[in-house]
Length: 447
Image (cartoon, rainbow, N blue to C red; front, side, top):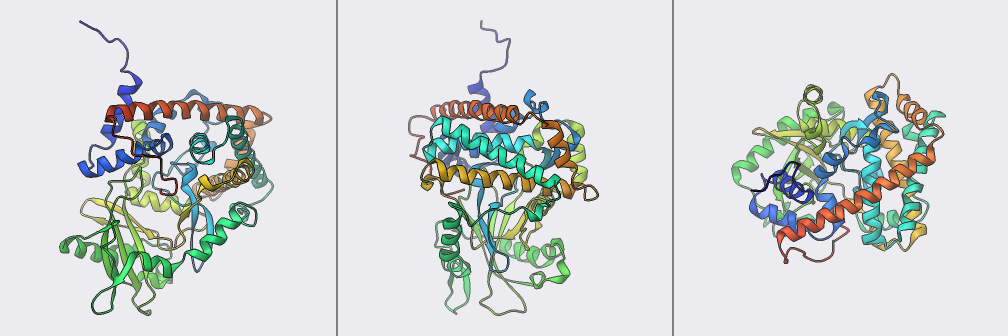
């Protein structure tokens, strides 16, 4: 008889954790998600945020440069290279930054930096083709930019004053192209068509949209017109509170980590405006972020008291973190399930790092990523303590002190070690699925 006196192998733990995380998905959705995760280590990393949090939550390095009440802020929660992208609308313009807060939470700032840095190792290898030494330098540039931005905050620069340099390459060409080639007209041409009476509707002939039952559609329409408007910030000041629902469809096969969650698109227009003023709303099931499972019972209790439900948490995070929050961010419920509601930006586009063209432009982009992360953390902290918005910058700057180089070394070392762990986890996952599970290289432009 064989006795096991220690925990199961890493391989077994990973496979069991992935299966448990995705146990509620249908067989079809689980297969689709696993196919995406099998494509590459980076795609696997993006589909297994729960593994990262289980690994990082009690990492001893947490206490080297944080672990304080004052080093906590709103976190993006799933920080990685392809969660940066273009977004915006014709009123606020086109911007670049993080625009996905499904896994956002309140916690120590280092977690976002650790996950983002690990994603850079995988992305630089898979998409940008950088050497290890170049990737190490790129991460250091990100961290330098982050710390310099915090220092600027100490000198009186507010989060709203921290801008991303769109005029510099490679963002300049990217933003210009997005502005030229995207927009409301192109978005509507992609997702909609006209019925026999010439009225606009969602084009369910597209592979990414599906029909819904009449009773489900009726419940969504009722929620959009009766529940949702009351959840909008400054609801009484905007005509978006009176919506006419034109059509509703199910959104299919979207994302990696969130694939399999209930998701719908709704085509709406303000009730007092012209027919051609159409808006595409993204209605997405919200669940607790992976970090929740790592919390103590007391921490979970405080979480439940802080937020009415996960869609409320998503909206609070969105307004806290985004410098240009979507005016349509709110929520609704269908039975006992909560959904975030937001506008699908007509300018949504990930930056294609596989077209980056070498180390120099990648380095320039990492500096902007550092500014974006610092700006979000400064904004997030100010939202938590509006009476003392500078507490976070003071605490982190004092904690690091003169040890900036050691701070960067610790994160770079973590990033490379965790990227190697991810590669091994991915290999075990692919092997467990069988020889036919690898479906080719990752498609780096989809999120």
